Length: 262
Image (cartoon, rainbow, N blue to C red; front, side, top):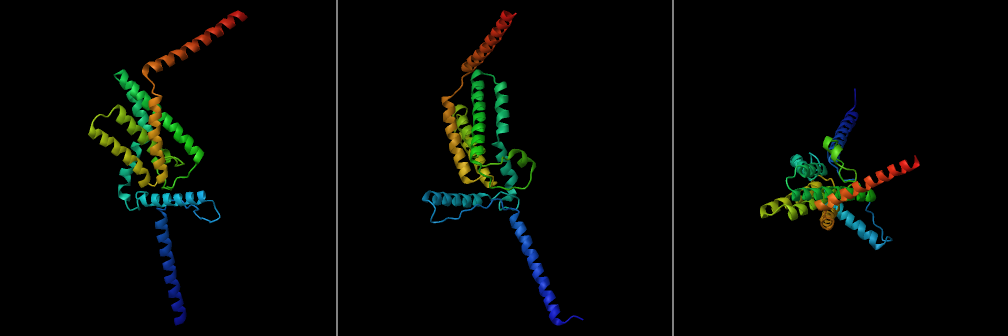
């Protein structure tokens, strides 16, 4: 028979084991939605003032981004509206915009409409190239470590700076406001869409606040550059004719050289 002391010890051990298992489950539940990777923000007084200031700003950026990531997973505070926010996010992806602009370009009824769609397509391609270049150079890791999803696997990129959705939202909004939208209600709708697309990246914890802010400024400046590099339909035809003429001249020169050798 077991003594009262051994019974007491066994009951204590079972209670401690239960508490440990419950704490372990609680940690797992909390870590299932831990979508911000830890970063080293240790500051030493021996470091330069620029380094201290930069780390302080990055800490604020991390804290603010973490506070805004309320739709990062289903267990998040606003996890119930996550599918709606992801739909808004997809509306700012480059694939539907490229498909829509190319389709409108091919089915355009007037030269002016085709010219606008041509420049919007070129602006999207330029934006895609510049964003990819900066992401490759900066290589800033995304804060979000979302669970494996089919759409996330195909549409979420590896690096976060700058935000491609924010640059695309800014350049498309400026493009639509300057070229196509002429009513106050449509202007409000376009600006609201651009704001929601940029905000979706923060709510889903896809990117940091600085990524989205820099992306908006970058997209705004890209449209100003596109205005200076505006390609007219006549200019495009001239470029195509010049290219075709050069190819014909090269082919004709090659034939002449072949005849001269024979």
